[in-house]
Image (cartoon, rainbow, N blue to C red; front, top):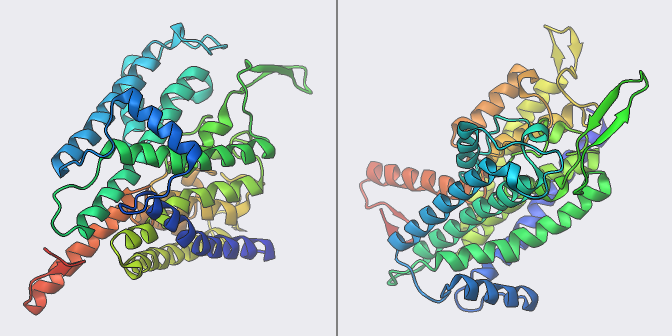
Length: 408
Protein backbone atom coordinates (compact mmCIF):
# COMPACT_ATOMS: atom_id res chain seq x y z
CA UNK A 1 0.00 0.00 0.00
CA UNK A 2 1.23 3.47 -0.85
CA UNK A 3 0.26 6.96 0.30
CA UNK A 4 -2.50 7.25 -2.32
CA UNK A 5 -4.09 4.02 -1.06
CA UNK A 6 -4.14 5.30 2.53
CA UNK A 7 -5.57 8.61 1.33
CA UNK A 8 -8.33 6.78 -0.55
CA UNK A 9 -9.32 4.82 2.55
CA UNK A 10 -9.31 7.89 4.81
CA UNK A 11 -11.40 9.92 2.36
CA UNK A 12 -13.86 7.04 2.02
CA UNK A 13 -14.45 6.58 5.75
CA UNK A 14 -14.44 10.29 6.60
CA UNK A 15 -16.69 11.05 3.64
CA UNK A 16 -19.15 8.42 4.81
CA UNK A 17 -19.20 9.88 8.33
CA UNK A 18 -19.86 13.36 6.91
CA UNK A 19 -22.56 12.44 4.39
CA UNK A 20 -24.46 10.12 6.76
CA UNK A 21 -26.10 12.86 8.89
CA UNK A 22 -26.56 15.16 5.89
CA UNK A 23 -28.20 12.58 3.67
CA UNK A 24 -29.98 11.10 6.67
CA UNK A 25 -31.50 14.48 7.55
CA UNK A 26 -32.71 14.86 3.96
CA UNK A 27 -34.37 11.42 3.96
CA UNK A 28 -35.94 12.00 7.38
CA UNK A 29 -37.38 15.34 6.23
CA UNK A 30 -38.93 13.72 3.17
CA UNK A 31 -40.79 11.24 5.37
CA UNK A 32 -41.54 13.68 8.19
CA UNK A 33 -45.24 13.41 9.09
CA UNK A 34 -45.57 16.96 10.43
CA UNK A 35 -43.36 19.06 8.18
CA UNK A 36 -42.26 17.04 5.13
CA UNK A 37 -39.70 18.45 2.73
CA UNK A 38 -41.21 19.14 -0.68
CA UNK A 39 -39.26 20.48 -3.65
CA UNK A 40 -41.55 22.39 -6.06
CA UNK A 41 -40.26 20.74 -9.25
CA UNK A 42 -40.64 17.22 -7.89
CA UNK A 43 -43.87 18.02 -6.04
CA UNK A 44 -45.63 18.83 -9.32
CA UNK A 45 -44.48 15.58 -10.88
CA UNK A 46 -45.45 13.71 -7.73
CA UNK A 47 -49.02 15.01 -7.95
CA UNK A 48 -49.23 14.03 -11.62
CA UNK A 49 -48.13 10.48 -10.79
CA UNK A 50 -50.73 10.20 -8.04
CA UNK A 51 -53.43 11.44 -10.40
CA UNK A 52 -52.49 9.07 -13.22
CA UNK A 53 -52.24 6.08 -10.88
CA UNK A 54 -55.36 7.16 -8.95
CA UNK A 55 -53.53 7.03 -5.64
CA UNK A 56 -54.56 8.95 -2.55
CA UNK A 57 -51.24 9.64 -0.77
CA UNK A 58 -53.07 10.65 2.41
CA UNK A 59 -54.90 7.34 2.70
CA UNK A 60 -53.44 5.57 5.78
CA UNK A 61 -52.53 1.89 5.56
CA UNK A 62 -52.60 -0.84 8.18
CA UNK A 63 -49.49 -3.03 8.19
CA UNK A 64 -51.36 -5.75 6.30
CA UNK A 65 -52.38 -3.36 3.52
CA UNK A 66 -48.82 -2.03 3.39
CA UNK A 67 -47.41 -5.55 3.09
CA UNK A 68 -49.89 -6.46 0.35
CA UNK A 69 -48.88 -3.33 -1.57
CA UNK A 70 -45.20 -4.32 -1.35
CA UNK A 71 -46.09 -7.77 -2.63
CA UNK A 72 -48.24 -6.34 -5.42
CA UNK A 73 -45.54 -4.04 -6.81
CA UNK A 74 -43.07 -6.94 -6.69
CA UNK A 75 -45.39 -9.26 -8.63
CA UNK A 76 -46.16 -6.54 -11.17
CA UNK A 77 -42.45 -5.83 -11.60
CA UNK A 78 -41.59 -9.50 -12.05
CA UNK A 79 -44.26 -10.02 -14.72
CA UNK A 80 -43.26 -6.82 -16.55
CA UNK A 81 -39.55 -7.64 -16.63
CA UNK A 82 -40.32 -11.20 -17.74
CA UNK A 83 -42.59 -10.12 -20.62
CA UNK A 84 -40.23 -7.41 -21.84
CA UNK A 85 -37.46 -9.97 -22.12
CA UNK A 86 -39.63 -12.53 -23.91
CA UNK A 87 -40.89 -9.92 -26.42
CA UNK A 88 -37.49 -8.28 -26.90
CA UNK A 89 -37.19 -8.99 -30.65
CA UNK A 90 -40.38 -7.02 -31.35
CA UNK A 91 -39.47 -4.05 -29.17
CA UNK A 92 -37.77 -0.82 -30.33
CA UNK A 93 -34.21 0.25 -29.52
CA UNK A 94 -32.72 -3.11 -30.43
CA UNK A 95 -30.08 -2.19 -33.02
CA UNK A 96 -28.28 -5.54 -32.67
CA UNK A 97 -31.55 -7.46 -33.27
CA UNK A 98 -31.27 -9.41 -30.03
CA UNK A 99 -33.76 -12.30 -29.95
CA UNK A 100 -36.24 -12.83 -27.15
CA UNK A 101 -34.68 -14.19 -23.99
CA UNK A 102 -35.15 -17.91 -23.31
CA UNK A 103 -38.08 -18.67 -20.95
CA UNK A 104 -36.22 -19.88 -17.86
CA UNK A 105 -33.46 -17.30 -18.22
CA UNK A 106 -36.07 -14.54 -18.47
CA UNK A 107 -37.83 -15.88 -15.37
CA UNK A 108 -34.53 -16.14 -13.50
CA UNK A 109 -33.57 -12.58 -14.41
CA UNK A 110 -37.01 -11.15 -13.57
CA UNK A 111 -37.07 -12.69 -10.10
CA UNK A 112 -33.44 -11.72 -9.54
CA UNK A 113 -33.92 -8.02 -10.33
CA UNK A 114 -37.25 -7.70 -8.51
CA UNK A 115 -35.75 -9.08 -5.29
CA UNK A 116 -32.64 -6.87 -5.59
CA UNK A 117 -30.55 -10.03 -5.91
CA UNK A 118 -29.39 -9.09 -9.42
CA UNK A 119 -27.93 -12.51 -10.11
CA UNK A 120 -27.06 -12.59 -13.81
CA UNK A 121 -26.83 -15.83 -15.79
CA UNK A 122 -26.34 -14.05 -19.11
CA UNK A 123 -23.93 -11.78 -20.99
CA UNK A 124 -25.46 -8.32 -21.16
CA UNK A 125 -23.73 -7.45 -24.44
CA UNK A 126 -25.16 -10.44 -26.32
CA UNK A 127 -28.50 -11.00 -24.58
CA UNK A 128 -30.28 -7.74 -23.75
CA UNK A 129 -31.36 -4.98 -26.12
CA UNK A 130 -31.28 -1.33 -25.14
CA UNK A 131 -35.02 -1.11 -24.48
CA UNK A 132 -34.91 -4.16 -22.21
CA UNK A 133 -31.96 -2.73 -20.31
CA UNK A 134 -33.72 0.60 -19.80
CA UNK A 135 -37.41 -0.23 -19.44
CA UNK A 136 -37.04 -3.52 -17.59
CA UNK A 137 -33.77 -3.79 -15.68
CA UNK A 138 -33.03 -0.13 -14.94
CA UNK A 139 -36.61 0.62 -13.89
CA UNK A 140 -36.59 -2.39 -11.59
CA UNK A 141 -33.33 -1.21 -10.06
CA UNK A 142 -35.17 1.96 -9.03
CA UNK A 143 -38.28 0.18 -7.76
CA UNK A 144 -36.51 -2.48 -5.71
CA UNK A 145 -34.31 0.12 -3.99
CA UNK A 146 -37.28 2.45 -3.43
CA UNK A 147 -39.22 -0.41 -1.86
CA UNK A 148 -36.44 -0.89 0.67
CA UNK A 149 -36.50 2.81 1.60
CA UNK A 150 -40.29 2.73 1.93
CA UNK A 151 -40.15 -0.26 4.27
CA UNK A 152 -37.62 1.54 6.50
CA UNK A 153 -39.95 4.55 6.67
CA UNK A 154 -42.83 2.25 7.67
CA UNK A 155 -40.64 0.54 10.29
CA UNK A 156 -39.68 3.88 11.81
CA UNK A 157 -43.33 4.93 12.01
CA UNK A 158 -44.16 1.65 13.70
CA UNK A 159 -41.64 2.39 16.45
CA UNK A 160 -42.40 6.10 16.80
CA UNK A 161 -46.21 6.00 16.80
CA UNK A 162 -47.86 5.10 20.08
CA UNK A 163 -51.56 4.67 19.31
CA UNK A 164 -52.03 4.88 15.54
CA UNK A 165 -52.62 1.65 13.61
CA UNK A 166 -51.33 3.22 10.39
CA UNK A 167 -47.72 3.00 9.22
CA UNK A 168 -48.12 5.34 6.25
CA UNK A 169 -49.03 4.90 2.60
CA UNK A 170 -46.77 2.59 0.61
CA UNK A 171 -47.48 4.16 -2.78
CA UNK A 172 -46.64 7.59 -1.44
CA UNK A 173 -43.47 6.32 0.24
CA UNK A 174 -42.39 4.53 -2.94
CA UNK A 175 -42.96 7.58 -5.13
CA UNK A 176 -41.05 9.86 -2.75
CA UNK A 177 -38.10 7.46 -2.65
CA UNK A 178 -37.81 7.49 -6.44
CA UNK A 179 -38.49 11.18 -7.11
CA UNK A 180 -36.72 12.84 -4.18
CA UNK A 181 -33.83 10.46 -3.49
CA UNK A 182 -32.90 7.94 -6.17
CA UNK A 183 -33.65 9.85 -9.36
CA UNK A 184 -31.71 13.09 -8.61
CA UNK A 185 -28.68 11.24 -7.23
CA UNK A 186 -28.64 8.79 -10.14
CA UNK A 187 -28.89 11.61 -12.67
CA UNK A 188 -25.89 13.45 -11.23
CA UNK A 189 -23.86 10.27 -10.80
CA UNK A 190 -24.62 9.20 -14.39
CA UNK A 191 -23.28 12.53 -15.68
CA UNK A 192 -20.07 12.00 -13.70
CA UNK A 193 -19.70 8.51 -15.17
CA UNK A 194 -20.18 9.86 -18.69
CA UNK A 195 -17.48 12.43 -18.04
CA UNK A 196 -15.17 9.65 -16.87
CA UNK A 197 -15.73 7.66 -20.07
CA UNK A 198 -18.79 5.47 -19.57
CA UNK A 199 -20.93 5.31 -22.75
CA UNK A 200 -24.49 6.65 -22.82
CA UNK A 201 -25.80 6.22 -26.34
CA UNK A 202 -28.47 4.46 -28.38
CA UNK A 203 -26.16 3.85 -31.34
CA UNK A 204 -25.44 0.30 -32.44
CA UNK A 205 -22.22 -1.52 -31.61
CA UNK A 206 -19.02 -0.35 -33.31
CA UNK A 207 -16.83 -2.66 -35.38
CA UNK A 208 -13.14 -1.81 -35.16
CA UNK A 209 -10.03 -3.18 -36.86
CA UNK A 210 -7.25 -4.27 -34.50
CA UNK A 211 -3.49 -3.90 -35.01
CA UNK A 212 -3.40 -7.53 -36.19
CA UNK A 213 -5.91 -6.73 -38.92
CA UNK A 214 -8.76 -8.59 -37.22
CA UNK A 215 -12.19 -7.10 -36.59
CA UNK A 216 -13.58 -6.58 -33.10
CA UNK A 217 -17.10 -5.61 -32.03
CA UNK A 218 -17.16 -2.95 -29.32
CA UNK A 219 -20.45 -2.94 -27.36
CA UNK A 220 -22.08 0.36 -26.49
CA UNK A 221 -25.44 1.42 -25.09
CA UNK A 222 -27.11 3.52 -22.37
CA UNK A 223 -24.72 2.18 -19.76
CA UNK A 224 -24.11 5.20 -17.50
CA UNK A 225 -27.75 5.59 -16.49
CA UNK A 226 -28.04 1.95 -15.49
CA UNK A 227 -24.68 1.79 -13.71
CA UNK A 228 -25.57 4.84 -11.60
CA UNK A 229 -28.65 3.23 -10.06
CA UNK A 230 -26.92 -0.15 -10.04
CA UNK A 231 -24.44 1.22 -7.50
CA UNK A 232 -26.68 3.71 -5.72
CA UNK A 233 -29.49 1.19 -5.25
CA UNK A 234 -27.12 -1.60 -4.10
CA UNK A 235 -28.43 -3.65 -7.02
CA UNK A 236 -25.26 -4.87 -8.69
CA UNK A 237 -26.56 -6.16 -12.03
CA UNK A 238 -24.07 -4.90 -14.59
CA UNK A 239 -24.71 -3.56 -18.09
CA UNK A 240 -21.71 -5.49 -19.35
CA UNK A 241 -20.86 -9.07 -18.43
CA UNK A 242 -17.63 -8.13 -16.62
CA UNK A 243 -19.60 -5.73 -14.41
CA UNK A 244 -17.49 -2.95 -12.84
CA UNK A 245 -14.29 -4.62 -14.00
CA UNK A 246 -15.25 -3.62 -17.56
CA UNK A 247 -13.42 -0.46 -18.72
CA UNK A 248 -16.68 1.02 -20.04
CA UNK A 249 -18.57 0.37 -16.82
CA UNK A 250 -15.82 1.59 -14.49
CA UNK A 251 -13.24 3.48 -16.55
CA UNK A 252 -10.93 5.19 -14.03
CA UNK A 253 -9.70 5.05 -10.42
CA UNK A 254 -11.96 8.05 -9.68
CA UNK A 255 -15.04 6.30 -11.07
CA UNK A 256 -14.05 3.24 -9.04
CA UNK A 257 -13.93 5.26 -5.81
CA UNK A 258 -17.26 6.93 -6.55
CA UNK A 259 -18.93 3.62 -7.42
CA UNK A 260 -17.76 2.18 -4.10
CA UNK A 261 -18.90 5.24 -2.17
CA UNK A 262 -22.33 5.27 -3.81
CA UNK A 263 -22.97 1.71 -2.63
CA UNK A 264 -22.79 2.82 1.02
CA UNK A 265 -24.24 6.33 0.67
CA UNK A 266 -27.94 5.58 1.26
CA UNK A 267 -27.62 2.50 3.54
CA UNK A 268 -25.41 4.52 5.89
CA UNK A 269 -27.71 7.55 5.75
CA UNK A 270 -30.74 5.41 6.57
CA UNK A 271 -29.29 4.67 10.01
CA UNK A 272 -29.34 8.38 10.90
CA UNK A 273 -32.71 8.89 9.21
CA UNK A 274 -34.15 6.01 11.24
CA UNK A 275 -32.89 7.57 14.47
CA UNK A 276 -34.29 10.96 13.50
CA UNK A 277 -37.70 9.51 12.60
CA UNK A 278 -38.04 7.65 15.92
CA UNK A 279 -36.96 10.75 17.85
CA UNK A 280 -33.54 9.51 18.95
CA UNK A 281 -30.59 10.22 16.67
CA UNK A 282 -28.33 8.53 19.23
CA UNK A 283 -29.98 5.22 18.31
CA UNK A 284 -29.10 5.89 14.69
CA UNK A 285 -25.48 6.62 15.58
CA UNK A 286 -25.29 3.44 17.66
CA UNK A 287 -26.43 1.34 14.70
CA UNK A 288 -24.08 3.24 12.39
CA UNK A 289 -21.19 2.74 14.82
CA UNK A 290 -21.79 -1.00 15.08
CA UNK A 291 -21.85 -1.29 11.30
CA UNK A 292 -18.74 0.85 10.87
CA UNK A 293 -16.73 -1.15 13.43
CA UNK A 294 -17.57 -4.42 11.70
CA UNK A 295 -16.81 -2.92 8.30
CA UNK A 296 -13.44 -1.45 9.30
CA UNK A 297 -12.41 -4.72 10.94
CA UNK A 298 -13.28 -6.69 7.82
CA UNK A 299 -11.61 -4.17 5.52
CA UNK A 300 -8.40 -4.29 7.56
CA UNK A 301 -8.25 -8.08 7.32
CA UNK A 302 -8.96 -7.95 3.59
CA UNK A 303 -6.24 -5.35 2.97
CA UNK A 304 -3.72 -7.43 4.90
CA UNK A 305 -4.62 -10.44 2.80
CA UNK A 306 -4.44 -8.63 -0.54
CA UNK A 307 -1.31 -6.58 0.12
CA UNK A 308 0.65 -9.25 1.97
CA UNK A 309 2.96 -11.96 0.68
CA UNK A 310 1.28 -14.84 -1.16
CA UNK A 311 3.25 -18.02 -0.46
CA UNK A 312 1.54 -19.97 -3.24
CA UNK A 313 2.32 -17.45 -5.98
CA UNK A 314 5.55 -16.37 -4.23
CA UNK A 315 4.78 -12.69 -4.79
CA UNK A 316 3.67 -9.63 -2.83
CA UNK A 317 0.20 -8.20 -3.54
CA UNK A 318 -0.66 -10.50 -6.47
CA UNK A 319 -2.67 -8.84 -9.25
CA UNK A 320 -4.11 -12.00 -10.80
CA UNK A 321 -7.83 -11.47 -11.43
CA UNK A 322 -7.63 -7.74 -10.70
CA UNK A 323 -7.57 -4.60 -12.82
CA UNK A 324 -4.29 -2.67 -12.90
CA UNK A 325 -6.10 0.68 -12.84
CA UNK A 326 -7.63 -0.17 -9.44
CA UNK A 327 -4.78 -2.06 -7.76
CA UNK A 328 -5.08 -4.39 -4.80
CA UNK A 329 -6.41 -1.74 -2.40
CA UNK A 330 -9.14 -0.55 -4.75
CA UNK A 331 -10.13 -4.15 -5.43
CA UNK A 332 -10.16 -5.14 -1.74
CA UNK A 333 -12.21 -2.07 -0.81
CA UNK A 334 -14.75 -2.77 -3.55
CA UNK A 335 -15.01 -6.47 -2.61
CA UNK A 336 -15.54 -5.67 1.08
CA UNK A 337 -18.12 -2.96 0.41
CA UNK A 338 -20.13 -4.86 -2.19
CA UNK A 339 -20.49 -7.99 -0.05
CA UNK A 340 -21.26 -5.96 3.06
CA UNK A 341 -24.02 -4.12 1.20
CA UNK A 342 -25.50 -7.19 -0.54
CA UNK A 343 -24.60 -5.50 -3.84
CA UNK A 344 -23.69 -7.83 -6.67
CA UNK A 345 -21.29 -5.42 -8.36
CA UNK A 346 -17.64 -6.48 -8.65
CA UNK A 347 -14.50 -4.85 -10.01
CA UNK A 348 -12.32 -7.96 -9.73
CA UNK A 349 -12.80 -11.70 -9.80
CA UNK A 350 -13.54 -12.75 -6.23
CA UNK A 351 -12.22 -16.26 -6.89
CA UNK A 352 -8.79 -14.62 -7.22
CA UNK A 353 -8.91 -12.96 -3.80
CA UNK A 354 -6.59 -14.12 -1.04
CA UNK A 355 -7.90 -16.59 1.57
CA UNK A 356 -8.20 -13.79 4.15
CA UNK A 357 -10.20 -11.63 1.75
CA UNK A 358 -12.40 -14.61 0.97
CA UNK A 359 -13.00 -14.98 4.70
CA UNK A 360 -14.16 -11.36 4.91
CA UNK A 361 -16.49 -11.55 1.91
CA UNK A 362 -18.03 -14.78 3.20
CA UNK A 363 -18.45 -13.31 6.69
CA UNK A 364 -20.18 -10.23 5.26
CA UNK A 365 -22.68 -12.45 3.48
CA UNK A 366 -23.16 -15.03 6.22
CA UNK A 367 -24.15 -12.46 8.88
CA UNK A 368 -27.10 -11.56 6.66
CA UNK A 369 -25.42 -8.63 4.89
CA UNK A 370 -26.34 -6.20 7.66
CA UNK A 371 -23.02 -4.31 7.72
CA UNK A 372 -24.77 -1.30 6.16
CA UNK A 373 -26.38 -3.88 3.88
CA UNK A 374 -28.72 -3.28 0.99
CA UNK A 375 -30.95 -0.21 0.91
CA UNK A 376 -33.43 -0.77 3.70
CA UNK A 377 -32.69 -4.45 4.19
CA UNK A 378 -29.39 -3.78 5.96
CA UNK A 379 -31.01 -1.48 8.50
CA UNK A 380 -34.03 -3.58 9.38
CA UNK A 381 -31.77 -6.65 9.45
CA UNK A 382 -29.56 -4.97 12.04
CA UNK A 383 -32.63 -3.82 13.99
CA UNK A 384 -33.74 -7.45 14.05
CA UNK A 385 -30.40 -8.39 15.63
CA UNK A 386 -30.89 -5.59 18.18
CA UNK A 387 -34.37 -6.85 19.07
CA UNK A 388 -33.07 -10.40 19.50
CA UNK A 389 -30.20 -9.17 21.70
CA UNK A 390 -32.54 -7.10 23.88
CA UNK A 391 -34.97 -10.00 24.16
CA UNK A 392 -32.28 -12.46 25.26
CA UNK A 393 -30.72 -9.93 27.65
CA UNK A 394 -34.13 -9.21 29.17
CA UNK A 395 -34.74 -12.89 29.80
CA UNK A 396 -31.31 -13.24 31.40
CA UNK A 397 -31.88 -10.43 33.91
CA UNK A 398 -35.53 -11.29 34.56
CA UNK A 399 -37.27 -8.19 33.21
CA UNK A 400 -39.69 -7.54 30.36
CA UNK A 401 -37.62 -6.87 27.21
CA UNK A 402 -38.18 -3.48 25.57
CA UNK A 403 -36.70 -1.84 22.51
CA UNK A 404 -37.35 1.81 21.70
CA UNK A 405 -40.22 1.87 24.17
CA UNK A 406 -41.95 -1.16 22.65
CA UNK A 407 -42.38 -4.31 24.71
CA UNK A 408 -41.08 -7.41 22.96
